[in-house]
Image (cartoon, rainbow, N blue to C red):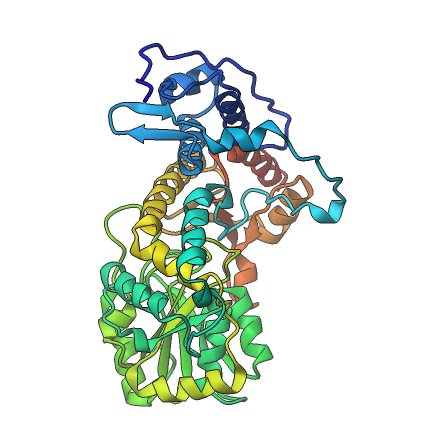
Length: 472
């Protein structure tokens, strides 16, 4: 086995600032190529992240992102206190020696490039492809039938077991796997809940402002939306005499304003649901992304799954491509939900469920989660520092130390729709806050996502955003 070299080689190369390829991916490509060609041999120690950042003139977080990506792909290894070293390439080198011909591409073959600051978008470039491939291959070898058949209408049992352990550790929810239904994402989970608990024409309480597709979903389902204004303590309770059958809440991190519902307001909602024979649907879409302390306990844990149904998703914390989520239902509702699943069928794909169960149980899921939370935390800090230093003349923001986006509230005289349109014309996405609210609301701001973009990608976009704001 090769020993670690004491000499740290220079990796001199030029960053193409005009390329559409992200800077961190350019760095990854150079290191991959040199590792495969043999110019970086096994055991070679790479420059420290700060030194590399200085050498290339980029942020340290960009170097960390590149190095971590190569660790995930198996090109590098990282040991605390020893930096990053090159692994043995082995089969990777053999696979690269005879390159496949590059197929011609049409415009439709290329996925659209995301524009900063698209909200709620995870960075799929950070996905642990190598570890996921190994896990999937292992299931294919040892238990291939589990990927195609044998699951109950509620989904693969081992995945439901893994989710039960996950929500107990991370969200303070004590639930049996029998209470968990695997869904094709959060929208599918909402559809299952409404089909099981409401009829066409029933009233449903929605936060204002709130998740825009949810409003459209309620209307398509024939439900009657009642809008509950979101305040500092959380969504307002439904007014007396107008009790909806269901309310959908985001108590751990309100979307899109941010902030957590106060304990008193949670208790008030639970008491309201008990006294009105109503149900609370808790949409916990990004609760794992809390950047100070542990995640806030879920309302469903607060309620002991009495009147609260809990919806979780893997699209934000793992992969949007898998389209997997889950709903946890109170015991008395299980039979009714089972009837719903039998009548309408399960939309969630079975194939990735067994690999995801093992990915969670083996600890790989949590290693990935810790890594992306650290990277997202650095990107969040960059955005907040930039807003604080260069945008105070245009508005303000509140730091809730959580989530995947920041809401920047605009000063009077600036209209969010107009600013958003000008930014879009210049290639930057900044959704207007007023779009998430009812027409008679006074919300005025920009919802800025940061997770899907490196600081080097956000920096020029911030310049464009300033230009759009200065245009009035």
